[in-house]
Every structure is written in C-alpha cells, then in structure tokens.
Amino acid sequence: MFSPNTSSVAAKNQGLWNGVAGLIGLGRDRLSIVSQVSSKYGNYFSYCLPSTPSYTGYLTFGTGGRSFTGSSLKFTPLLSKSKGPSFYYVDIIGIKVAGKTLSISRSVFKKSGSIIDSGTVITRLSPAAYDALKTAFRQHMTQYRMAKPFSIFDTCYRVKKNTTLKIPSISFVFGGNIEVVIDSSGILFATSSKKACLAFAGNSNSSNMGIFGNAQPKTLDVVYDVAGGKLGFGYRGCS
Image (cartoon, rainbow, N blue to C red; front, top):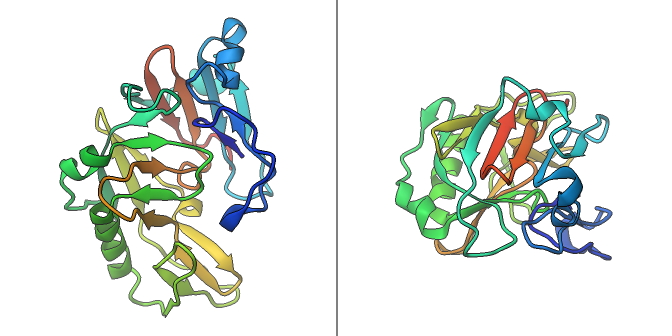
C-alpha cells in the first residue's frame, strides 16, 4: 500500500488492516519519494488500484504513462497545502447516490477540509455527510437483511452464498464540478463470506479532516499533476 501523505516507510502495521506489507511515501514534503526523484520525473505520478488481488494495478512516476494522456481524464484542483505540507487537499462539493445529489451543505465539507490518501483504506466523512450517505444507501437496500456492525462499519448486510447484492451507484463531486463514479468494488467491503458493509465511515466530529481513501478510486487512473496543481481521474485504468 502506498500513501501520498506519508513520508517514510512503515516497518510494522497494526489494527484492522494489519495484513498490508507497508507504506511508501508519496507526499508533498521533501522527504517523500516524489520529491527525491523530482529532478528526473518532475512532480508527477499516477496509479491504479485493482478491484481485487487477482488483477494488477500500477504505479508510474513521470508523465510517460498512458494515464497522463488519456482523453477520459477529469481534473480537479489541488488546494493549498498550508494546513499540512505533506497532504494533497481536494475540494469535495457533493455526493450522489443512485444519481441523486444528497442534501449536504457545502459548508459541511468546507469546515473540515478533505484530502486524498491512498494509505487510508476507507473514506472518512464528517458526521453529517456520512449520515446522509448512509441513510440514502439504506433506503435503496431495504430488500436485504442487515447484519450487525463490524469495526468502523455500521451499515452491513448478510450475504448469501453465490448471491450478488444489487447496490445503488455512488459518486463524488469534486471542485470544478468533476463527478467521479465509484466502482462497485469501492462501495461494499466484504468482512467475511457472509457479510458485506458500506465501505465508508463517519468521523467522530465535524472538525475532523475528511479523507478520500483507497477503496473508493479502485479501477480508476488517479493522476497527480503536482506541478500543475491538479488531480485527475480516468476510468478503466485497471480491472
């Protein structure tokens, strides 16, 4: 797992995601790998995280990868890094469920601010934003039996063997009115063979920073044009 907001390599990982091998720092600060190789590759990199371990993703430094020239790329501005020199701040302005924009004031997102971080697995939202997302999602899932919460997940469903849940689409709208549709692999997280949970979590209070984690942009080209001050998303980067 690599993290745009981490400068050093983690020697040991604990907690819910203790099966990962470590972290590679891709942050903005001078200790990150991006900064250390900038003389050769510039401040550009991109990646695609596959939907399952059965598929292959990529990590590319520089602008030589196909992701930088893809016609499907949509860019949103990277915001000022004054709050945290290593972070990649983005402007989340809305969330849609089944194509309908949720009733969330933009001030909810503005209050805490948001970053994108591939080293954080599950997207964390302010309580108001998460409650709106959870409520809308549950309204589209009434045909399924809910299961007990698991760890940080409070919206879980029982999964029968050889059965695929029909779930509503979820998309995030970023600054510049860029809508990013989340792949189904980034909407539900299987905690066991019999349980799947909504792959988002709420922060403990409204002032905690929002984090767009690595489960949500799975299968997408994610392009960091740090030099140009923008972040790009492209579809079908990997399976």
